[in-house]
Image (cartoon, one colour):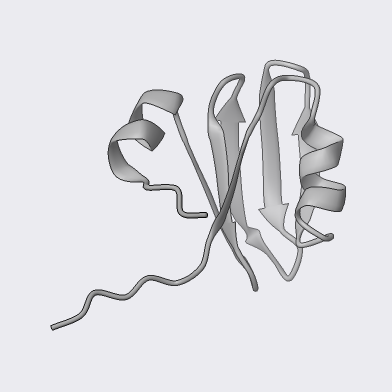
Length: 84
């Protein structure tokens, strides 16, 4: 039986790239809720109730349309596999 996965994109928050994450990276699929340089809060543009909070060094994981989550760097390394 084959395993299948839906395509998802990920990016690490460095405290300075919140606008980039919600702009060019997500192709406007994410809305910036807040960004204080330590914590970033974003929401799926099409469904604002789907929000993700990430701290510096953590990862935003998104899948259009309308799905977003976040995870700490350690958990990202444990649970996610990056494909080319």
